[in-house]
Structures are given as C-alpha cells and as structure tokens.
Length: 436
Image 1 (spheres, rainbow, N blue to C red):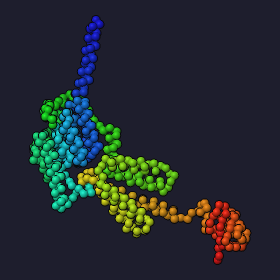
Image 2 (image 1 turned 135 degrees about the vertical axis):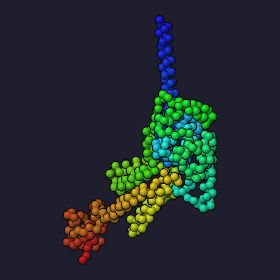
Image 3 (image 1 turned 90 degrees about the horizontal axis):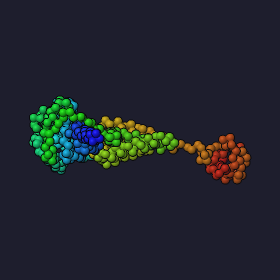
Image 4 (image 1 turned 90 degrees about the vertical axis):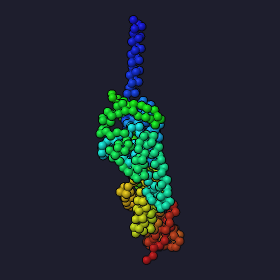
C-alpha cells in the first residue's frame, strides 16, 4: 500500500515537472518596436532575444514600425538576431506603418520577414553628414559618400544572401533609396509572408520551416501556444523617455533658467533643486545620443551674446545673433543625418526664443539691482544729508535720519549747518559741510 502511494507521488511530481517544462517551451514571445531605433531600443531588443532564448520560446515576434535610427544601434540588434538560437520573426504592422532605413536592414535580417497590407519598407540609403546635416560635399564628399554606401550595401548583401532574399532588389533600397510596398516586397523575394493581422500570421507560421543563420533548420508551431509580451523595464522606459532629443533639450533649458533664477535670487531653494535635477536628467538623456560639439559651442556662444546684449546695449543685434546661434546649435546638436533623430526647426525656435527673452529679462533685472545704491548698513549711510547738532571742531555731534551720531570733520562746521556723510568708522561718522 505504501509502495503504491509512493509510486503515485512520483508520477504526480513527474507530471508537475513535465507541465512546468511544457509551459517553458509552449509559448511565443512578443515585443513591440514602435519608434526610432536608438541605444535604449537596441538594449531592449537584445535583452528580449536573450530572454526568449533562456525561456525556450518557440520564436520571438517583433512587431515593428520605425522611421529609422542610428546605424550602431541597428547593427547591435542585427548581430544579436543572427546569433540567436531562437527564431526571430519581424512583422511590419499595423496597416499604414512603415519600416524604413535601419528598419529595412532589421526586416531583411529576420528568420521570417512579414508585412501587413498597406505597409512599406526600404529607403535605406545611408546619409553623409557634416554637423548633423546631410551634405554633398564636392568630389571629396562624393567619394566619402560612395564608400559609406558601398559599406552599407556589402553589409546588406551578406545578410540578404544568407537569408536567400533578392540581393539585387535589396541593394536598390540602399543605392537608390527605393521603397517597397508589401506586395512588391513579396513579389521581389524581400520578405516571406504578407498577413493582414497577427492571427493570420500565426496560422501561416504553423509548420513553417526556417533555417537559422547558423544553418540549423527548425519547424515553427503556433497552435495552442500562449503569447507572452515582453515589455521594457521601468529603467528602460525612463531612459527611453528622457533620451528623446527634444525632451532632453527642454529639460536642459528649463533647468538652466531655474538655476539662474536661484543664483540671482538666493533663498527660494525649490528652483535650484528642480533646476539641478532637470539639468542632470538632460545630461543623462544626451549621454545616449551622438553629440556634435560644434552645436554645443554655438549654444554657449548664444548665451554669451545674450549677456553681451544686456551689458553693452547691442540694440537687439547681439540678441538676434544669439537666437540664430542657438537655433543652429540646437539643429546640429544631434550628430546624425537622419531627420527622425534630429531636433526639428520648430522645436529649436520654440526653445530658443523664449529662452533668450527669459534669460535677458532676468539678467537685466540682476544688473539693474546691482547698480542701485545701497540703502542699508554702513555703506547705505554714505552720502546721506544731515544737520550739525553741535559745533564740530575736530569732533562733535550730528543729527541724521532722526538719530544722533558722533562725528568728525577735517574743517570746522557750525551748529545748524547741513552736513554730508563721507565715511563710517564703527559708530562715528566723518562728515563735510554741504555748501550752497
């Protein structure tokens, strides 16, 4: 009897272990890649692929819509995808979205590339930039642009050929900046599937055979699989938010104004604390972005011109020059030719003009207060007019602001004469007679 009970316990324990193991295998991991491809996005995707491998997911589904992003971040994602033991399915969705520039490379690198109706991909021509702006810099610039394009096409060829995709058409997305609809991409063998939604995609993937980049073949199974969403960690969400170029800039400008207010009006405390936090968050956000230091210098020059405008009365010329310098500095601050990753002209003007006005108003108020005559303490008594209460022959007494003070003078002063304070020495005043 005891042996029978022990046998049942072993069977139940084995069933439990089998159930846990089955749950680990029977699932599809899913992430949503919506927005520009930057270092935080790359970290999220890389960690998700590694987690899907560790949890033995059937495959990782990346739902993507992106205007592009940084080449280094794209390469980090692709490198992890190609080395993954878990298949990666990239699905451009929903309808109306695009997967352009760096996203085009990621789509072609996937084990399974799929698109929804009404989507497009391509437009992956690498841009050469000076100071963050695309340029065509003469013969030297054309030579450099040709080298960059050649490098990008070689990178794409190595991926597309290994995935058995149409290398010639893929190159057109780089060399000619050609875009492809989902139908064109399927007809030209750039993608594997077109599915209207996730349900249809999973139905098409049931039993679908894929060859990993390592050469291993595997059949995908979606029937009865649970779909588990991988989301960003709170840290990644926070860093992703503050590393948006426009928000990082706004935090920095707001922080500088608050710090300046605290320095010119000490004692408020709150502006200094909030301003310091904003500046540090701005620096943290920009630390994840490629910064053009010429843009930083132009912004510092703009601040100098604002100060000069107030001090030397430049009749608006210096202030206008400061606004122009700040706008240009902000526009080229992010060192990338990709427009989706730069700060736009509208945002630059919206930040620069109010900053210039507020900064110069606060600076003018500070300088005006510094030029005002001191009215308190010993220094505030110099120049005041009073009356000699007694004769002053060397020393005597004067009446000043309703108070009697010991006084001295280098020349005799008769009682009742008007006097002026010329210096203060402890509790004694040195005065002179006011004539006329």
